[in-house]
Amino acid sequence: ENQKTYFHPETGAKISKNEYKKLLKGVPQKKEKKEKLPPPPTTGGDEVVEKKEKKVVKDPEQIFVDDTPIGDYKHIDGVFPPTYQPKYVEAAWQSWWEKCGFYKPNVEEALKKKC
Image (cartoon, rainbow, N blue to C red; front, side):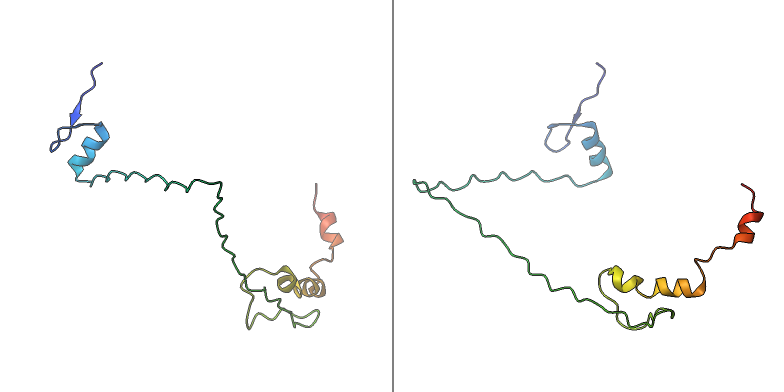
């Protein structure tokens, strides 16, 4: 019941508390939205206007081939594909990991650990 009423200092129109605070801070007001014009009337008959669809032409994706020998560290010099290609990226890593022994279990170390 005890709400304060705020008025625009120039126009005298009733405004909200937030708008009043913005006026005090000097924040510019939003301009009024323009009304959309109604579409032009159709010319009588049952004519149907079809919209033309835009066709997006994509460049064919270039497939990169990894030339790293099996078991060697992957070559990371040169040109890379613009998008992620798992076959190219992961091609040499698996064989290098196996060659380095990353997948060999260490039984003695595992037995020393207590569960």
